[in-house]
Figure 1 (spheres, rainbow, N blue to C red):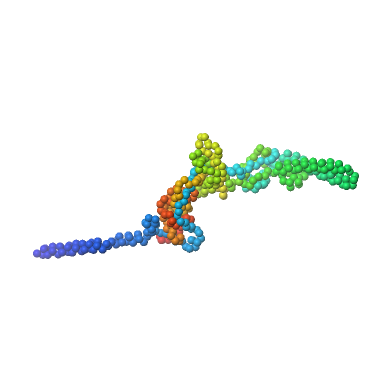
Figure 2 (figure 1 turned 180 degrees about the horizontal axis):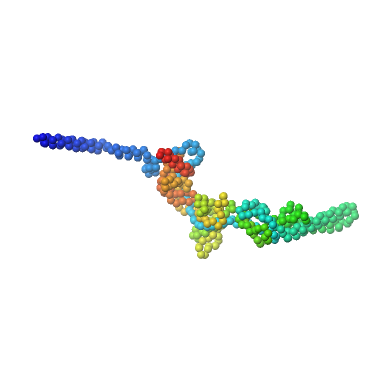
Length: 409
């Protein structure tokens, strides 16, 4: 009897537990209730997610800039739009000196070098004396110049004397005609000798002061401003016009000679802009333009030589460097959604744009890129036309974002 009572109590307890579980489950289903865990997950998602172009952009943390930074123009905001990307033709080439700004310096007449005033790498001005020579030929020319100058003085004195005699009616008029003829002849020879000295490189002040006691050395001038890139002379050597003593080059502008494939000739023309890069300075881009395209195709390589003139700030480019060249050509496809190259920032291994709605708070958003050209990059995913983004100042925004993350940690 006692055992039956115990079994009855156990059965009643089990029934109560099962009944309670059934009632809770039924009421939970009917009221649409959710578990605490699910509610917590939804709350976190709702609090941290920010709407992107697909309504599910999970890049939650943004950067809010101070008003003074916004007003300084360090960050420039643009509206996403479609752009006709310029095409690119890639080519390889070699840097060379600009032949239009290069001079080979040699003496006008033979002589022995007695002084050298310039060395490799020196910056020289136009007209600067680079060397001086002791020249026998110069000595002879100076002697003839002095003789011609004396004859001029003598002829002038004779002409003045005869004029005085004519005024006194002592000399005949035909004598003054002969005196004037002699004077003009002496002046002609004098000017010839004077011009010869100028051509040799002497200035009037130098040969006017020349005397028997004072020896004049032949100067060798630089005809252009630039850098001494070659030097082939030392004191004591003999030099003549056939010997190049110095090479002076203006390295502020250089040439890049490239080989253009025959199939790309229709796209390339004089004046077309080009971007030049070299292995020594991979972060630098040197801007230039096409100034010459050869008229002959190389029979072996089926390429055509083209010349690009490029500015050389800081003299980073050096002649004989190998270069990679990108020539921009007219667009060959419809406009696409694109942003400037500097707008895209690498953030944790992803390509990111900073999107904004109020030009003060910027949200990083991952984007996918496509073609590029003319300083623009196509955006294939992650951005809609009309959205506002940071076209300039992406690295500043990235820095501020990283500061915020470190501060939280």
